[in-house]
Image 1 (cartoon, rainbow, N blue to C red):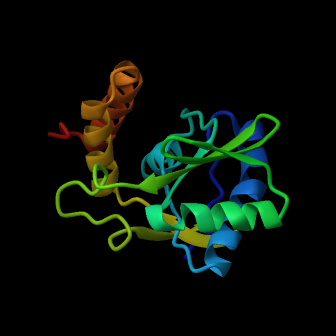
Image 2 (tube, rainbow, N blue to C red):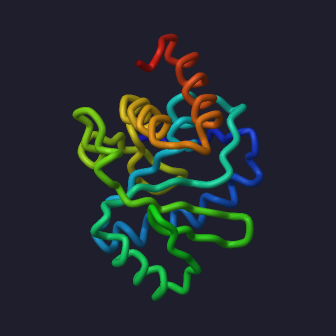
Length: 168
């Protein structure tokens, strides 16, 4: 497994996200919680487009582990807050969103915790959505949002250009 060495357009900010992300992934692993990175990082990982900006890291975990992870973050003195889909970990301008996997994200036949891609995230092994799962999650997010249609639509357009085809 090759360690990532490519960085997004906002590399300076992104590099500050890496240590906190690695720490949260380690906490998950020690507590038998399987984290799956998704969102803009998954998009960047698959497209390798260095023009993409990544302002935060989005992680999915199974819903049943949200409170367990919160207890562990508290033990480690990592500041966080709850928000409707999960937990936000913030350290200054650095932000991780840890979302609970819910049935709306279990689209098509892709159960996200079984069909993920294993990667080396800058020195720590973890999981990222497969390209097919990323397509499906964009479709589900586009259908369920009212506020972010334009933002998600742009991500879908970019992914379609990369794939050379329409998503659906």
